[in-house]
Length: 371
Ligand SMILES: Nc1nc2c(ncn2[C@@H]2O[C@H](COP(=O)(O)OP(=O)(O)OP(=O)(O)O)[C@@H](O)[C@H]2O)c(=O)[nH]1
Ligand SMILES: [Mg+2]
Image 1 (cartoon, rainbow, N blue to C red):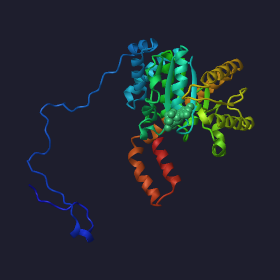
Image 2: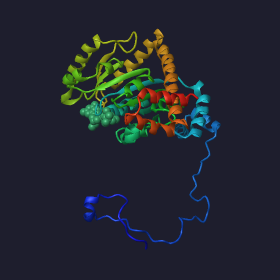
Image 3: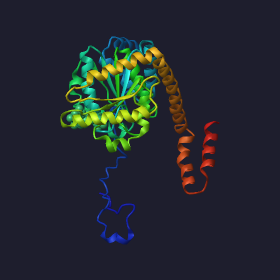
Image 4: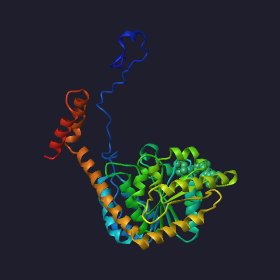
């Protein structure tokens, strides 16, 4: 047994009262653990699924294969990323035919319940429905939709539905790249409607607006105060405002709220050219107003396709996608640059200590980066 001692640091003034000690371990004379079998604890690199198998599986709508391909897309490992890009390249010609619908709303507005009800309605009508989620905070919370499986119980058991929780961001691109690519895979797998749920916080609405054809805002009754506080910006992104929970004693109030929204929407810039955004009511729990909302969306699709606005938006979204990926890549290549990464903390500290300006620090880093 080696000698007991105090920790490396302790408060000198309170030394006498200090009860913790570092107890020396048993000295066996061994430098460390030895493994008899070499490689027993070595990391295994699983072989990647064959490209043709993935392609065939997805085109034949096999959900297990689809889930596997999405996992590759979501992975932050470089070799998975490359493999996923090859699959996407093969499947690109089979994508694009679905209707992409975004759903936002404050926590508790009833998004998950709505998706359960709306999704089941669509599945019963013979459509295949994929539900994806965008939650930029999911790397912290672990993905909101996961806990939602209970709220989407019926839908998650439906053979026509496929539910996927939000990916977390990583060094190989943010949540938006992963979700957009997942949309393409789902389309190649034959899904007719893609529902993208997002929490109504931060940038997530804008991210989702940029990847869907139709965007709806789910809201609650008693909106008097809420309407005042609601960000006008979000209402201007929406193609429909849905006042949910229009049931029981809440029904009357819901109608009133709808009218209030309609009055405000009338003065706002519509999200889609040639389409007047309106408010509607529904009850997700009692499945009321759900077929009517689908009718509105189909009418939107017809109108926007006839006027060319639909295709125009998709073209613009592809352009935005390219730009956001360039930004992702630039960020990655800068912050993970072998000369920048180790130097950055030192330079940051110099700036924080007031020994140099931010501008000169950034200039130096960029000089190193572009060398
Ligand atoms: N009465 C009534 N309650 C509803 C309705 N829709 C949802 N709820 C209830 O409202 C609560 C919140 O619903 P969720 O679907 O979890 O809401 P969400 O918007 O997904 O919430 P987050 O995932 O936390 O952002 C649940 O207790 C639901 O049962 C509805 O149409 N009528
Ligand atoms: Mg939810």
